[in-house]
Image (cartoon, rainbow, N blue to C red; front, side, top):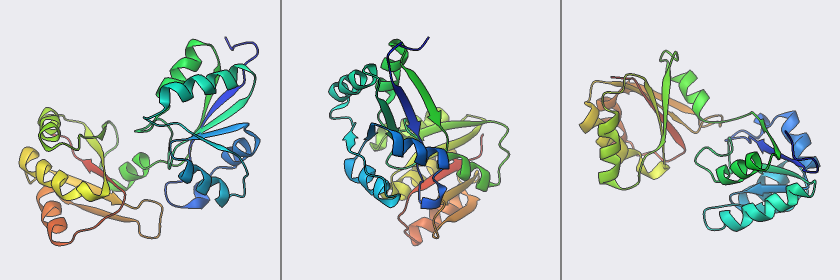
Length: 228
């Protein structure tokens, strides 16, 4: 049951590279929202400027999540409309905002999601693997020993694996995967999805590891690995 006087929290997906991937509904909500919330104010302003939308952007990140959540909840309880966006892609996936959504649910403030661009589905579609079932692993630890332990726990997983990582850590990630999973398992790496630099590399883990050791490349990427 919706809080009788509350506003609405919209979770708005935004483009991951190609600005034309914004939805008409997302534009309508961003124009109408009383408040736009984003992890980084600079990225939020950049997005709104792209579509000629004038709105103040409120930061919500790991440094201020608790206090900002309280402020946004007060705003919602007073009947205002809030749009939560990610720096790119779908909100809440490896981004702040879960605490805000949980509070809204607890207080019966209505929350709805506006689906749109994200990196996970395109990477899966372009991988060439069967998509009957997969496991979204998300971000592994930046610390080598913890990352290796996480990969060891996934070694016998039979589902397709979807892993995200920072652009500058592709080589150490592939080295670890190659050593722990073996070199023969097939994988696909999707780079710079939706942009004019979009590239999909498909090969064995061993071949991909060797290739990127010899041909360093930076850019946003998603790693998809076949199951055991």
